[in-house]
Length: 277
Image 1 (cartoon, rainbow, N blue to C red):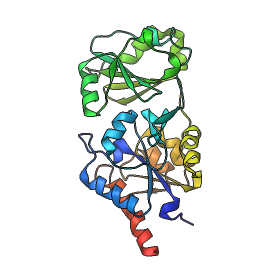
Image 2: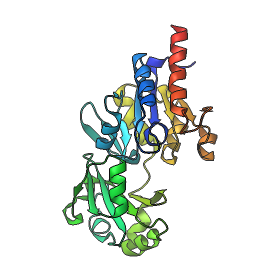
Image 3: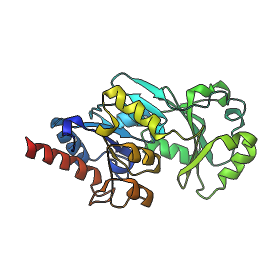
Image 4: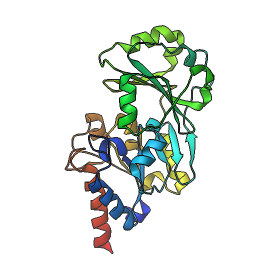
């Protein structure tokens, strides 16, 4: 039996399914989100961005549960202005943070558990991403950072084909074997202390807001949400999602990620709610 609209929490991939190619939230999406909320719909989001960047993009859109930001490493409650870190570089100041390589054309930024972003080394690519993603930042030094405050290390390359990973493995030595490296874009590599499990993310979002896994609908279009797709009571992906997401999801939208997949799902829930009223 399907849950009613007011008994369902929708966790939506903000970056890939709500934002346009320029990284903004279009008016059409805002209108659908407002309509969804006016009919009792409950929403939260998943994003690679920091809490401040997410808040700037959403504007007046109210979230009904903690958002998974910084690639799912931080569950952030916007109503309270507090976050729960799901991983950190605790105890890795000497082995990782102070050994990050200084490479020409590579910018380095840290996403922090307090929701801030610190830039350790600027580059053209990093400056461009900060501007495009509405990310406020402060310049910092690795020597001044405590590992337990760091969620993710982001590397932005001016030259997209630069072999960054071998350099990191050489500089970090044995510590590299305990880290998880993931390329999120041709010019962006992310280091985390390990993978955050879908169970950890689900438990940081649903129980605090009073929802069970069965009441969660995940609308996903990125690999970091794959575990959540498996765990949620309902899961939906766009028609052009990656094969592993399409195989795991309960259903696919008729539209692609950039042609209305999120609006299709949310408006469909509104229509069903109106028909059953």
